[in-house]
Image 1 (cartoon, rainbow, N blue to C red):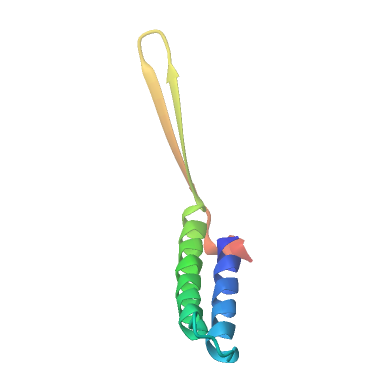
Image 2 (tube, helix red, strand yellow; image 1 turned 180 degrees about the vertical axis):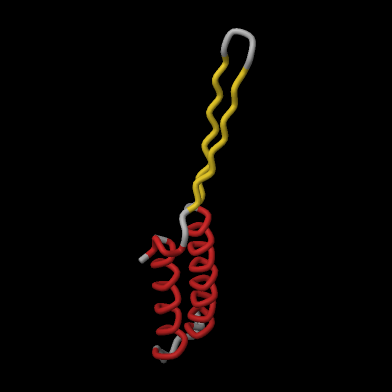
Length: 84
């Protein structure tokens, strides 16, 4: 979801920065467009990082018996071939 939001922010910012030319004394739409494009890039990169981190799962199982404890750790990582 954040990847799409980042792309949308970037596109809207590019439209404001390069395509809209309205005379306005209060707000500079070009600057707002550049700010939105920068925010879109940041949101896109955060989304990609979170997407990569989500593909790793750690599971810890702890079983306690009469006198000893048994701990099992399992790590599952998916490869990039699963993305297709």
